[in-house]
Image (tube, rainbow, N blue to C red; front, side, top):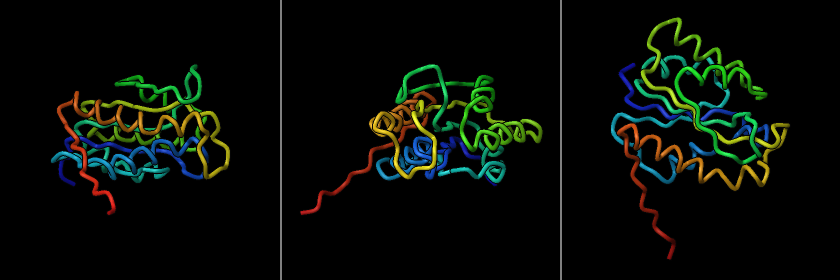
Length: 167
């Protein structure tokens, strides 16, 4: 696999309420923005170790996820570098082991990204549900914007797609 300059990876389970926030944010990112050359935005869902080749090929990674924190539901959270692994490992999400294992696997096999950032939202409910809670749903667009701004700070400018209004 060739080098990916920036990998934006949406994580979570759409079947578990607020846990699907990261996947939904990346879906909206791809619908509303054009990725810059060398950047890839993927729905990683709950794929865990099968995402290892992407992570190993990426210089810079932004993980987008629901993340447990001592803050009210809907609060945006940013974690970077060595803090990402522990943050992913201590969450209460059904895919927590997959994310922690993915990071550990990349580190053990080499090819760990130079820059790693987790941008997320604090969930209210990660029980079985196809709908996100109002507190988290209200922040998905802000989460998308946070990813776009994070990427821009790293030198990767996403450009807004022009959406034609139906006549």
